[in-house]
Picture: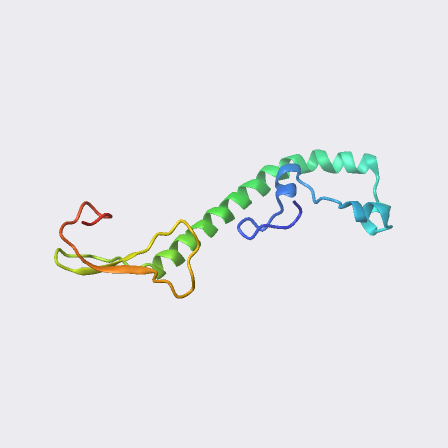
Length: 123
């Protein structure tokens, strides 16, 4: 995979091998990267880049953590905590295993809350 990911801003190939991939189309066509290729110079650059791979991976890891925190914060902004009390009327989403029509009901109820079990389920 040669497309940079949004979370790391690096391609998975470059994180593994420390260099950008040359796609087969570039090998057949004369391009700057292919025409200026020298095997000796390439081996020297690969040895130097081995040290840089770890730094690249560390930067990608930091970016990924920052991206995760951003996603968590944006999710938490949108989600509202709902506190139900005994006696409240609630609707229950209809769970169907087969596809339903556009006009079929998606909620059933109302039901009266008779008890609360922990933070999630209610009776």
